[in-house]
Amino acid sequence: MTAPPSSDAPAGPAADDERLLTPLFALLIAAGLCYFLSIAALLPTLPLYVEEELGGSGLEVGIVVGAFAVSAALIRPTVGRLGDVVGRRTMSMVGAGLAAVAVVPLGLVPAIWFLVVLRLVAGLGEACFFIGAATAAQDLAPDHRRGEAASLFSVAIYSGLAFGPTVGEAVYKSWGPTSTWLFAGGSAAIAFVLSWFIPREMGRAENPAPRRGLLHPAAILPGSVLLMGILGFTGFAAFLPLYVDEVGTDQAGPFFLVYGVIVLAVRIVGARVPDRLGPVRTSSYALVSIAAGVGVVAAVGSVTGIWIGTVLLAIGMSLLFPALFTLAVNGAPAEERSHAVGTFSLFFDLSQGLGAPALGLAVTAFGTERAAFVVGAIVALGGLVLANTRLRAAAPVSPASS
Image (tube, rainbow, N blue to C red; front, side):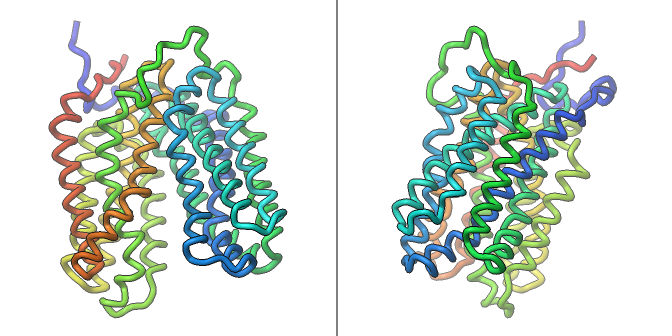
């Protein structure tokens, strides 16, 4: 009897023959695309509505936009556990339904407090939908193709986030805010309908395992490494628009466009990389690329340096999430998979909610945006150390290929 492969063992030939791109998997990707189009259409339009229509201040804009992430982060661990009890279809449909209900009425009451309430509801919906749909994609994947499944499902997320703001802004400026809310709500409603096709029994546990606590232990280490890696992108996204003036350009948009295109391309073309190389090795390469990317932006101090850094950062970010997501899922029993996904995605919220203010303190202390990039690079290298010590030692053994 041969020893089972390590967590970084490549998939065997038999695993390659197992089908991943089934009609149901494609439907999940379509549902995810519609859902995140809905979410992203509001990114540029809600601030305009708060400022222009309601006369809100910068602080009020921040509160309305940020309320979404607050409720999503608070509910993720609990919702993750619930997803293992009620099943993937219920979670996805509830999440998409809450999003539609929270978007369509946005203009009914012209008051900041009303928007905040609706955004809190939308955050609950985001937590439910992501956990339900992302876990369903993992349930459909053969054991040795979970990294590929995570990469392909994330294409829906990144596509929605890439194109949603442009579409939402165009609708807002052409037909006004009401049309924007209807477009976003309609997209969420389509995701609701598509989620209905997820098998009712998928992920439903007849005898749920006892709760392991608020956070699932299998996702804590991968999530911590994710947080440390994503901090570099958080600094890049938050402070590059302010930094470009120092290097002789006034546009950050082209860098973000190229970043998004590279991430999508690598996620599609390189979807098998986490399964081929193994999740720990892939995440290590990703962390090196992230650290190098933001490090180059800080050290070179030129437009060329930003372009080089953007490419390196995009390559690293495209590989980091699928690799670590695979580790979190593989470390949890099937009946606890949603709980692990909820815990893992919480660290993404923390990287945004806590990371940006922390990097802002560094910028204030040192008086330059470069401080954010330097801190991001250092923390990513810390994640590399964690990945190759504790994460490698704790990584679950992958199922053997037949």
